Length: 472
Image (cartoon, rainbow, N blue to C red):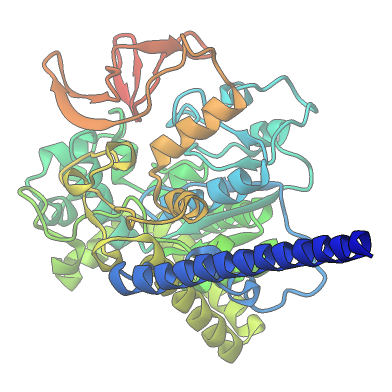
């Protein structure tokens, strides 16, 4: 009996102790939970509100209206014309390919031998005709389709962008005043527009920036005397080569048409304006296009008659495309695109999304390259973004030169010892050459051989050839 009583007592003590342990554990868990709850409440009360990450937005917002059952184009050739918002378009192509691991046809320097006609051997890594290695091509070139076809697949989608020649002339004057002899000789754009032939010599290097620049970029003879038959033949050649021509003045509508032509999601064509210049005129550039009299504007149209014909022709085609798309549908999709851009600007950018002078950008690796009489603006990232959102935003504002270097380094990795420094625009002038700039600690004098034996600088938009000066 005593033994049984002792056993019952031991079992009771064991259960009692086990119950106490469970109670203690429950009390401990309650304390921990309460502490976490109080911590969350406290942190929410004291931390500033951060923008919502891009990736918390619904997929409907980022994808845009349905495109049906089409498949996205991944073989793309963009003719990057000058002073037409083409840097913004190129950024879209860079982002699209970068995010999907596509291979780019990149130049040895920063342009494909411009202003010489394009040659396939200027593509870094090109291995010969019918060896298809590349998906996207978009850096500056003078178009030469037979050579482009050696590089790009047969199903490549070709497109480009044009701009009113009067506005293009004003922008070209401000940007290329220092390199185009015709612009150098004129006191202002108004003087040049009044009598272009007084300042223009077709034999001088870089004067192509001063006459029919679009025509030149499309690979046509920009110094040819205008005739309707010549203009129509040139227009027909462009139509045969390109499936879509966008308008710089109607950029958002252009992006909607491009999105549907390429079967891309909405976010792929949402952008911030890149390589834009400060609108306030600086010394020597006060004769802006908007300040020209109608008489001078008409003289610029006559001087750039081949460009004017091209622009008028593709302006008509553009609005025919819009009509076929549907005016009401276009307005709806443009509104969606602009709303999405505003959301991204709030998430990504400081200063309310406004572009700022390069000197105000704290991160020197995303300062835009400066050229000509005007200041080229850039953007600053919003602080406090999570890593994924920060990288997505950075892709949208990374300047063309830096983005090209990044893609180049990924496609053609070097050993750590031979890799060049990241591009950092520091605006130091070289005493030996007034247009030389130090980028990322690498002077323009540090160059490498191009395919034809000429010298190509690593981190500069200028190509220097022996005894011939800079080639942009």
